[in-house]
Image (cartoon, rainbow, N blue to C red; front, side, top):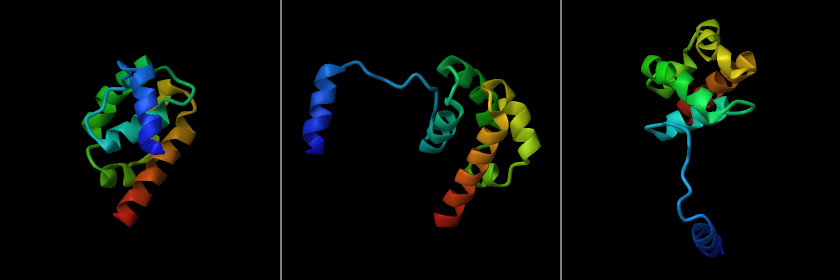
Length: 96
C-alpha cells in the first residue's frame, strides 16, 4: 500500500525536493521545527549559524535556552521553538 502511494506521489511530483538546507536527519528535524509559521528562506539563514554552533543532539539537549532563543529569534515564536528543539534533543539523547 505504501509503495503504491509513494509511486503515485513520485509520478505526480517527479522533481519534488525539500527547500530546507540540512546535512543530517538531526538538522532536518531542527529546521522543520523552525519552519512553523516561518519561510524556508528565513530558516535557511538561521540554520547557517545554528548548525555551526550545535552539532549533535547532546549539544541541543544541553543548550542554554536564552542563547538558542537569541539565535532563532527571527523565526518567530522563538521561545516555544527553542523549548521544542531542546526537548526533542533530550528525548533523542535519552532514547538513543
